[in-house]
Structure formats: C-alpha cells, structure tokens
Length: 247
Image 1 (cartoon, rainbow, N blue to C red):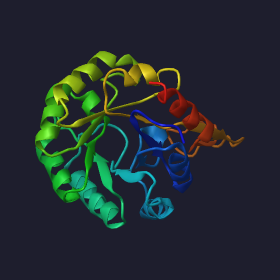
Image 2 (image 1 turned 180 degrees about the horizontal axis):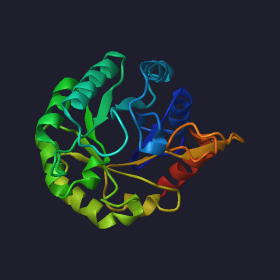
Image 3 (image 1 turned 45 degrees about the vertical axis):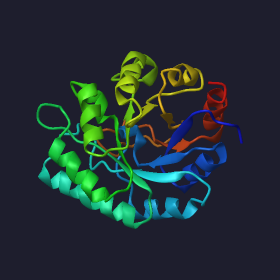
C-alpha cells in the first residue's frame, strides 16, 4: 500500500467497492446507490452487506442519505424520511452519514440540517455538495460548523473540482481547521495533485467504470435506451491513489 500524505474517500455502491477501497487505502467510503444521479440512499440490505465487508483496519463506512434526485429543497415528509434513514443506517453499523438540505431561498435549511445532525446522535456528519448550489458557500460552511457538522464535501461551486480551485482555497481558509474541507467531483489521476495543493483535508472520488449491454428497451423517462450500470474500477482507483502519493 502506498503512503498517502492526504486522506481520501472513495464513493462506492456495494461491497465489491468496499473491498477495492480497502485495497487502495481509503480512509472512508461514501456508500450510495444511483451515482449516475449524484447518489441516493442505498437499500438497508446494501448497507448491511457493506458493513459486513468492512474490516477493523479498513475504511469507515459513511452512508449518503438523499431521498430523491433533483434539488435539495425537501418538504417536511422528505426530511422525516432522511431522519429515519439516518437512524436506520447508524443502527446497521455505519460510522457516519452524508446529508444536506436547502430552504426556499437556496441557502442551507438550518432547521432541517439541525434535525439531521440530531438524528446522527454524535456520529460524524458530512455536508454533501448541496454547499455547491447554495448562494454563499462560505455562509454555508459557517452554518455547518455551527450545527456540529464535521466535514463538507465541495467542488468549489463548479461541476468539477478542478474548476473550483479558488473557492476551495477560500473554504479551507475560512474553515481554519475547525471543520474539514474535502474536495470532490470528477477528480482524476491527472488533476488530483493540483486539487490537493489547495490545502483541502481530503479528496473524494468515485473511480467509476460503465458496464454496458445491448439492451435497447427504455426502462424509464431518464433512460437513454442504452443498457448499462456503473461499478468501482480498481485500476482507475489505483491510478488516482498513485498520483495522490506524489501530491
């Protein structure tokens, strides 16, 4: 295993992804389903299988709790589902959760996020990339820290982290060690060292590879008619890790 000067987190969708994360030396996995949609809450059985695949000296399992695709302006029913999913995930043995929500103005929903942090009952909470679609990422960072969130995941307000370097640097400066800043979104072996140089505390990447099939029947309104699904690719993950070793 390579020595890593910077912690990293691997986004995975199943126990196979957890085993790859362990092999390449990840500090954590963010477990989700439907990464093509930005990630949704995984099923209880998936959570259980990944927790079972974890080892004492392997990555921590943190679960993304996101009830649907689209924006993060959740109504009371959706926030109630998030709260229940947080409790179920922690009861299944995960170490932390990844959450976020907005109010009608697009800013972080203080009350909703506070309910999510309370539901975690002291377990580590990461604020996901909702921060990147709020009108003031610095204010969002400050509120997250105030509410007891331990880490924010950000691309610096861009679609890819490599295009949000200045905002990432500003977030790191504002955090001043009081809350972790983790860079993520579209990170590859070719840009991870540049992103690491912003001073972030960790990086997050998915190392995905698409497995396609010849199916041409559409299975839903968002289906382009080309059958396929994404998996964690060991070689892609290793390429990023090897580049990070020289950051």
